[in-house]
Length: 351
Image 1 (spheres, rainbow, N blue to C red):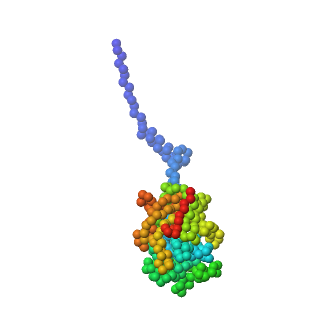
Image 2 (cartoon, helix red, strand yellow):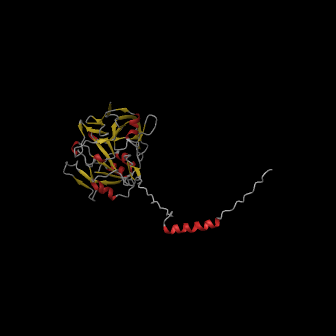
Image 3 (cartoon, rainbow, N blue to C red):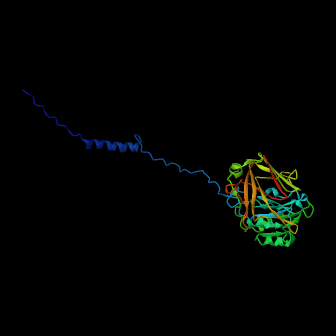
């Protein structure tokens, strides 16, 4: 006989009563702190960056150096500077952005010196204007100082639109005579005062191509190692530039002796640009012909590259291109232009 299984009855839990016991216990423990405690969420401190954005920069128009924005907001100052042996050492010639050396009467040279990156308190000795100077100075569109000159040359300079300070006609106190040298090699210009009086005149436009650094200059990239640049303007005017790696510049000599500042430092240049030019003579006055073209060499960083120069009009700067017609890039820094005559002059590049 088979026994029957008896079905078991599953009794439901009395959950209502259990909850009734648990909830008061939890509430009680929350009040007494004897069990788990509810904690507040901690707030993290706000993060702040200490990064300081670099100051905005721009390229100085006549040196190619990187400078703070606004620091080049001044006109250029060109001055006709004496280079007679009795005028040396010149005042502040070592602070120029650009210098153009040109042949004048008697086989000697004079300078058109240009300041813009910084303006010295004084410059000099200041001498008279010559026929090629308007062609050199006109592209800068700024200020010019000279002692005088033939009226035709003074008129030509004034016609360029530059603001002129002329020693022979000045009654405003911009000029004085130094006791360091004898007349006529002692006319000194109050350069910073002249610029301050004309502070609203616009700065020049960039005149030449510049590499970001010396290593990118055209001569350094594509040139030939040259240690000494010898130039001769006439039988009585020999110049030389010797590359000095420690100074990262070319050191200048005149007529076999170092060319010095009043403090005894040797003049130097980051770039030396030799421009071969034709020179004409009118009423015994030599004129360097610059609205033209010809051969040139550009030296930077101990190397030299052959180039072609051209100048299409008085208001245009000298253009420098390599054998492929590509614009030459100078190294950032100061530049000396040697305007060496094709006839009486010569150039010798020494490895």
